[in-house]
Length: 81
Image (cartoon, rainbow, N blue to C red; front, side, top):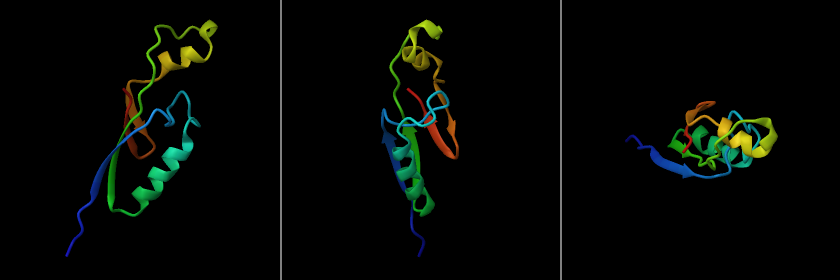
């Protein structure tokens, strides 16, 4: 008898990205532990506030603009919305 994988969609504004690699790392760590079981398939939606400029003068807000729309963070698919 084979077990089917549970498919989950993780929706969190606290999730690492290329621009903010340690932001919400605890959420990614928990997801990784679930994935290690082999019984879970996951996709991540990590919404980021829209900001129009990546100019340094805008500080942390400019990081929002520099965040890629989608990508794969390690082995976890992470469509950033």
